[in-house]
Image (cartoon, rainbow over all chains, first blue to last red; front, side, top):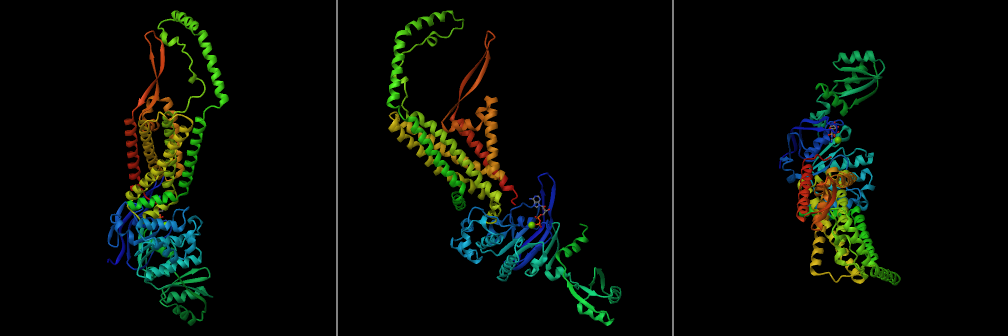
Length: 306
Length: 329
Ligand SMILES: Nc1ncnc2c1ncn2[C@@H]1O[C@H](COP(=O)(O)OP(=O)(O)O)[C@@H](O)[C@H]1O
Ligand SMILES: [Mg+2]
């Protein structure tokens, strides 16, 4: 078995809008998703995540580039690997007038899965009795669970979730997160797209960040967000001028941010308090500033002239 | 492909619109039989008596005046300008017959072909509508995208859907037509005349019925393609209605010569094994008069069959090509 679940090279897609305008959605994307574990596929809205996923699934035709899933070129050999892929693209879409169960039965029959599997996956996703209600009547969380149940019909090795927590309440978000974590721990590959870093950083083993349809960074979460450098801390202190002088003299970068100072370059936050206390400047508040995706993204795209 | 077609058939039969459509077909069938029954009812004793009286009066009148009128007419004929109509056509006063009065009995062999043809229209319409919504709903709900992540081979998906729509309507059309055929036979057998129903008549009727089953299946498949192309049931119905009104109605009225290329006439020619249509032919006579005539023409069965076959193949191929290339959201 190949240790790369998904790989794309030079993937490209331009849409034509109704008015004939061209929209470049993906431009030369090189993506590599290792097999096993959860991989976050991050990028702001409109950066081409959904389009890339659709191309991988053969729903949208790529203009250029190559893709493989489990080492098989897709979409050419997609029929051979599709049984190993479970995917939910954007919001779950089923036949609204049919019950959840009926929807699953049709899918199961189409792929030749045994009928009993439907009951099992309904139980697994705790839909149970609600499976007999029309899909139309489901809450977003239930629709999401039905979609997960559908992917489980195939017992897939690769699961693709496109912004699965969009519109869910905190309980729903946690549930999805736990599902993804569980699948990752079972050794399955989970590709989860999101525009919110916090949403995936707790579960993702590795991430890829894209912007304007291009890969900007990839690696483990720490590698990508930290960029290998020391974290930034936010400091509240009485005398800004004096504190800045001291910290700059110590080789740190300091910026004012309202009533706080943002200090970069300290390998250990204790360093900051110690130096200031030494000069009788006492820190009343100190917090690490977590790089969020937007700032990492902005940082990453700055140099690109995008 | 067989498995997929079975799944699609199951989906077709589980849809509410299919159930509603079937109920509608059932209702129309019943109404049609009831109407036939009313039509075939013989006159009441009072009405029969009135008809008899009218006949006797007419016959008496004829006995008294026919000779006189004939003489008068012949005299008139002599004074007619040339070219004269034929004397035999102008001056006919034939003896009234009792069967010309009152209601003639309903003859099964005469009414049945019309009835089957009429049924073929509403069957085709229902099949088209249900077919269009079968695929239109799939696209408008977005369920097709999910479906394709289970079976990405588009042409199989396409084929299975059309096949399901078409084959699903074969038994439906067959049952509806059989009920109408045998129901009418029973009614007419009781109230009218079925004596002339020879083996050949039965053969012709079942051939018409068989072809109506086929056109229903085709309509279901074509409806599916149009639903797929337009991605919306309502849009599909709208387009077809507009076509029927504009092309088949308005256009045909202005451009009579185009009739052999319209769907309706070819449909009739196929189902009825030949169809009549009329065009106005005008010519300037030797004396400079401008005369227009309705001329009856026949569109052959073969024309209809080829037309429908080519039409279907083109539409199905077009739909397949579009679906094969289309980005699905
Ligand atoms: N069907 C479409 N037609 C035209 N433009 C599209 C279509 N789908 C997406 N786009 C455009 O392509 C870009 C990428 O969209 P998308 O892949 O949905 O991004 P993301 O999922 O990262 O938010 C956006 O600018 C979007 O407007
Ligand atoms: Mg998206």
